[in-house]
Length: 203
Image 1 (tube, one colour):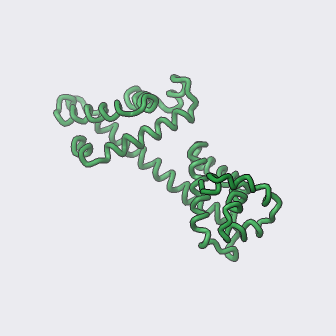
Image 2: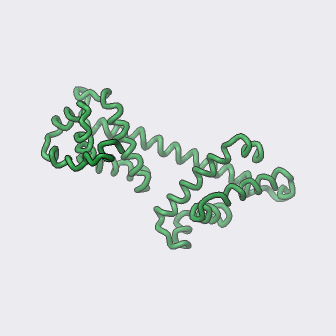
Image 3: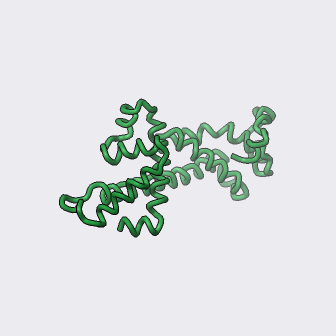
């Protein structure tokens, strides 16, 4: 998360394990990365639990937790103890990061739904239209460029209309793994389809 982690500063957490909240806040605001480590150690579970409950996904919750503490560290000058305690401030940041994650998820889902409706579910009689054929070729080509696991998950979702739970049952992969492959594949597909030439072909 920070250079503290990279340089092994987390080994000093024990030095602050018995520190009271006020001491942790003082060290944190002073820019001591070992105090950031201690703050993360003390309140990371709180942030993660909030993210996990809201997002329903451990990996996304872990990502959000890291973003929260990174944002807190970078924006620590904006924390005013007189206006509230540090855990409450972290929760406030967490709620914003969770909202961002949910918005990003919604955008991905909307994009894929629109792409699926446009590219894969053409109305009867439209299959022979040149633009429809091009759409299918573009999507098939982009899917073929994905890593095998991501491609398999998206093919099962697109073409077989399976839910992520059904895909997990079929493949034997953990649900979290399926979600991860889907999320990464969709991100890559969305990024590629979002390029001007791809949009022009799919219009």
